Amino acid sequence: MTNPLRPLEQALDEARAAWAAARPAFSSTPPGDAQGEIEQMSNAGVVAVTDAIAQLRRDADAMLARLASEVARRSSAEFGADGLAKQQGFHNPVRLLAASTGGTTAEAAKLIAVGESTRSRSSFTGERLPARHPAVAAALEKGSISTDAAGMITAMLERVRPRVDHDRALRYESELVAFATGNSLSLVTRAVKLAEARLDQDGLEPRDEERWQQRSLTIREDSNGMLLLNARLDPATAAPVKAALEAMVTDALHRRRDGDVDVRSHAGGAGEGANSAGTGAVGEAANSAGAGAVGEAANSAGTDGVGEAANSAGAGAGAGASVIADTRTIPQMQADALAELARHCLGCTVAPAPAAKTTVIVRMDLDALSSRLGVATVDGIDQPIAASTARRLCADAELIPVVLGGGGLPLDLGRSARLFTRAQRLALAERDGGCASCGQNIAYVDAHHIRWWERHLGRTDLSNGVLLCSFCHHMIHRDGWQITASPGEVWFIPPPHVDPHQKPRLGGRARFELSAVAA
Image (cartoon, rainbow, N blue to C red; front, side, top):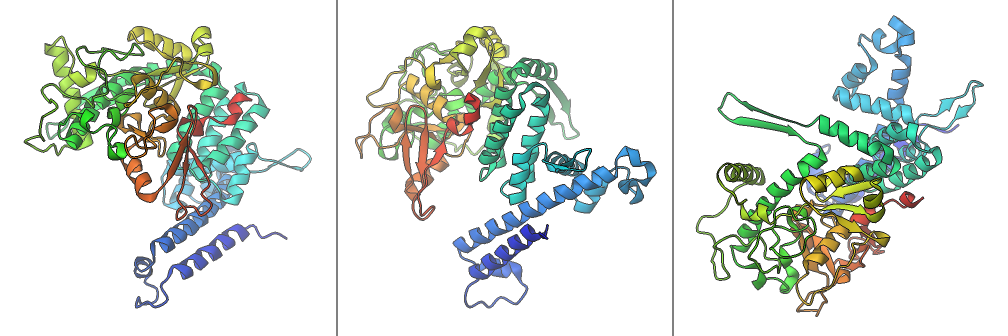
């Protein structure tokens, strides 16, 4: 007879082995001092033990979800006062589980939902039937995904189940499970949102309308005299707000980093540290004027269009560092940006320079544009929207959408001799969707040459460009990662000390494009 606790026992054995291997041969730490032993472990040992304990946690959570489902079943309304939860003195199974785990009722409800969607079922004849979501159930059984990821995937599949072909949903489920294995929950969230939009395109527009109806902004003053603004905005409403604020914050960050020196003195140099000011809030951080008519909300005039990193008024090529250091936090910068926008709206006819140069990029393929059916995305916002919503957004804001042609590539993009052109940066934004490595918001990334312009004579073309945040850019150069790119994909090859097999890792937006989309 198979021992149901065998996965837990095996994971515990592996954790013990990892711990023993990570301990130094000679230690002065008293027996039982876990923290002391951890502090004496090597870096590799700490990582190995962390991985082993994480596996043990996933296995334990999977078993807990099974138990939660059974607690809920035995506490159902049909049992009345004899239900398990009421017998134990609790109003419902959620409260019983919250008390047992020491967690919140929301966490307990999630455990029950995961357990119920992944438990095997019985037919009227007593035959055991597979779970409603077999791929998620199998992954939980192996401990390869967390209950958080399982809950997110199954909740989405339950939402679309009445309107989606069963076999197609199973294909998406399998691919989402494969994606969730080894990826963070934030990346899984993005993949699930896109999968739901692809699976249930008919439901996109009603959901967009529902989100729009739920938009709100409340303002109140607290006891300290601070005004509290609490906003809930649908993607279409939030897009221009987010874009303008992020452009102004990016402008401030670039000026703080570069000391108000014209970025053209840095671009293309060693390390490609600040090439073309990156993509900014929406594919271009305060992009200069005259760079084309793709989605410009309020394009300013009088600059040369070579990608100056939000070169503010009065900060010329010879300007030195700021007299007073900018020590503001990102939230403080966002608050100041909001106040500056409001002041300009009240007293000026010209928007602040970074906001005036901001672009809101709305992406959809040609079929979606012509048919008004399908999916569109807004740069910097993870939630996809209906193509019809995107068309209204573009019309209301006097924007022109970036239309994607065959293979999902932007149409009619050229090359540049040194700096990445505006068209190329838009293409990189389409391919990478933000930092191609970690997925950082597109507002805080820069366009870099993979093979450096000066040192390696690298070309300024799409296959030699990549969007990276400053941290990933530094780590890639420091640790010796390799990058290979094409117009449609970007791959990261780890150094031997990270992965002895140097298996390439897919980055950029393509990692979220499940192959089931084409099925």
